[in-house]
Image (cartoon, rainbow, N blue to C red; front, side, top):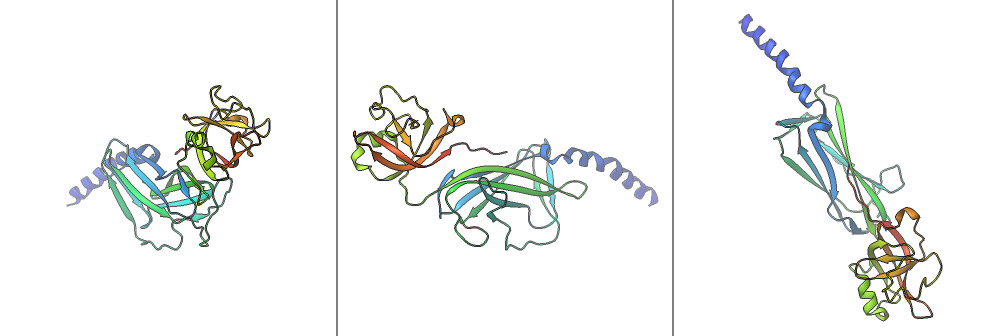
Length: 264
């Protein structure tokens, strides 16, 4: 009986560290990311985040957690350090250890919905936001090892006209004057397409007016100056359609946002 017990101890000592060593670096064992289902959402409407966990370790993997909470999600307004909203706020979780098993290559997804309100229940304003998803796993030594993933998204003001292309403004400019629209395209700086009829008259308001090109046409934008690093970049413009005294149509922008979304 003593021999059997001694043999089992040897197996545990020799076998245990090898398994722990393979799973010690959680960052190399799993891929963790968060992706908003929509990159641009009307303020006041729910935003859905898809959290994805993939086993890339080359072997079956069992993740352990110190409680029933396996992840957390936070939303920050661009330029702010404090979170506007946290998923776990007000939630209760079991305090016992839990686990999750993933075969090699297996993917588990979690959907988290945010109603667009902060932790005090107040609607957050339109603008650019960052979502942070944290995986709260334990390492083989029993200490929490957090993996973080990030993505960005935009809350646009409600009631705007979306899905508009520049060609729509070119074809029937009179029906758009005074209306607020959202356009996405390339910032061509001060170089309009030489064949664009809307830009033929040159800058409509100031010498700093720049050109937005979405592939269906181009149009001058005024009101918001874009810095040099946004030249030739994809941007989203929100503004009112205007017409100057000579009849030239342009966009008086209230907001210009880079269309650049990423996860880490």
